Amino acid sequence: MAFETGACGPSDRVPPSPAAAPDAPERGWILLAEDDDELRCLMADALRGGGYAVEEAINGADLLAKVGRSLLGQGRHEIGVVVTDIQMPGFTGLEVLAALHSSAPSVPVIVVTAFSSAETRAEARTYGARDFLEKPLDMEELRRAVAAAMPASVPPKRRA
Image (tube, rainbow, N blue to C red; front, side):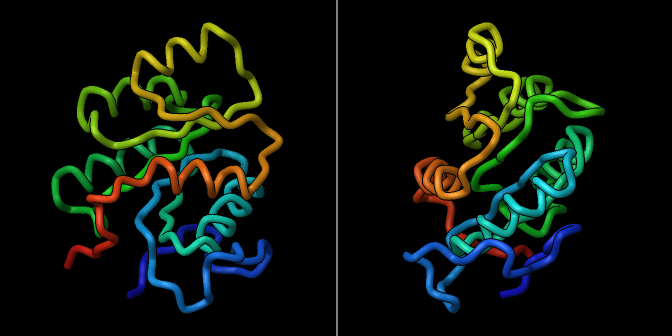
């Protein structure tokens, strides 16, 4: 099953996790928002190596547009998990969380940040953030957080 790969495309920069065979079925769809191109590519590669399909967003506005298309049935995928940076141009991760909380409250969101504070964490939790990951990221920690957040009831599927 082919999925859009975003700006990075598939690569072998990050090796597959030991649990994911190269021909393993996709484990769900992740919408990943990170404005740093290099980090977004590393994160996307790590998640693809873990058996997930990943669509990339370059900022908060791009992420919200993709979520909107998906909710309207116009996207190619059903959202499993959103992974978003906090500090991005367009809309911040907190603004994205607030929008998701009102439009898609059941979608798990993992927040990635280099600027963590108790206030930011509290506000993000108010809007339903499932987990927080600190930069610099450990890619195995990212995979574990996504695996824990991925709903069992959201099968990986592609819309026609």
